Image (cartoon, rainbow, N blue to C red; front, side, top):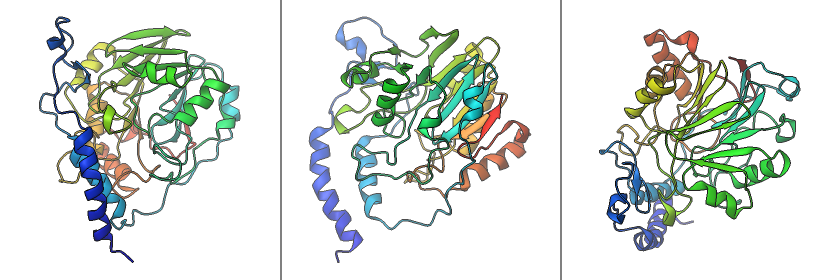
Length: 353
């Protein structure tokens, strides 16, 4: 049998030339195209983050993923346990605000009688192919068949764990919701014959069924393959009702812009904020994923009143043990006096907000 180390070297030898051939060699500001003075985050062929010191090059990330594929997996503990939820209460609900964690970054949020899904994913893998890639560790907290009518869907970006084609195609076919997406994704949806899509830039907004959907900044990246890196925008979302305000952080690293979101649109009655995927290969703070302590700082910056942690314990994506993110979150919440404001849910569990 070929040793793991040898297999890693072979994989690297095969992948590196391909990556180098496909990587873009130049990045230009959008202003160079002669169209005037665009927003800072706009480039000629894509987008960038607001923090000028942001750095997360694709080549080391891709090579790290290849090496991880062949390295021995550590024991991360037992997967999460589901809370039984057949959807009956949610289907019967009228105007009472609820939030149900389906798993990873997928939540069903009920606000003003509107049913909203965030980054919906009912797939068994997060991958461009069905036969390989990170597996789901725990089933979705609700069966797709048990959902109430879905009226709106917000998408934070195009990574496979946040934008799953089989799931959004089924939603479009069976529920016909309106999809709210950041710049660049409307064409992707159209390519898959999904037409009811509202595409927004950061701070752009649209109304639907009495709710305001505001596309707000994030610090992250995009790309479904090597050749389309950062061609489509990434975002957080603010969903504003008559009396309740919901913030969905999608997938993001920490940056100073969260305070601006809080000033413009907060305070938020409920905030769904990621807490997993923060262990980087070099041991430094992850530029694309907040750790639990940073997640609480995001919560504070936006003026959150109640927090639901997400993006943890669902897929075999991250390096940290399954139980570590919520443990660190509760410890930091205790230090800050915020324990009563943090609601750690099981998949399938609902809360009133």
